[in-house]
Length: 313
Ligand code: CP
Ligand code: NVA
Image (cartoon, rainbow, N blue to C red; front, side, top):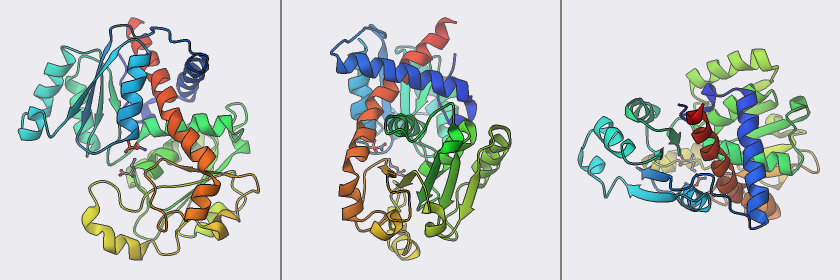
């Protein structure tokens, strides 16, 4: 049995298989063909943080696959009143076939997975957001900005906070072998452990990873420019300080203008205009951004089907 806790556990070949499956199911869905790949499967979705995309895409996804989604907010279940995570994991996994959890520390997710009898999917932690990266990868492929055979043709620039999204990009680039430049303000660099792991994988894949404090250096000649909020869920108290510290890191027309002419702009959403991205850049690239959001649905359908296949092996 496999869990999907972070991309560190997945090879390039496995990521490609999940993406291939996602594209196949997307094609079928677009042709109104809904095959019951996960007939009668129950997916529990536990949220300790808010969500729009993750909730809707997992719930619609499991339904389209012939199964059923159960939305569980930690505010409403006993977990929120102090029932231990390991008890919650043992109870829920005795009744369902798949579990998605959005939580705070990665160690909470790991503990949950340790006690779960069914595959557990990371629906975002403070450390990483791997399901989002599957959707981002699909979008890059659709816009011809990435090809598994020629990863070195792609340059991605991430500008902003060294948060769960930046960490996830570092691991993805290192696994797949493309060039990634991450520009953060001083003091907001990516997680040290993730950086070391990414550099280790990059040595094998040939990926070039550049860490800088200069957004212009990062974006120059990039094929894909991406960013994320400066104030992640749980950091609301730091908002004022962060807005000051991130001055100069907004992806505006000047910064975007340094990328390749046909560069795409991705944002996992929700986006805060006038902070990490300007209104004009956001609207000029809304086609990519909302295809990326829709791809959450398709990517996760591929992932769920792939995870259940692993159990049959
Ligand atoms: N990008 C993303 O995960 O969005 P939600 O927080 O709305 O799920
Ligand atoms: N970095 C953001 C991503 C939201 C999808 C957060 O964790 O809040």
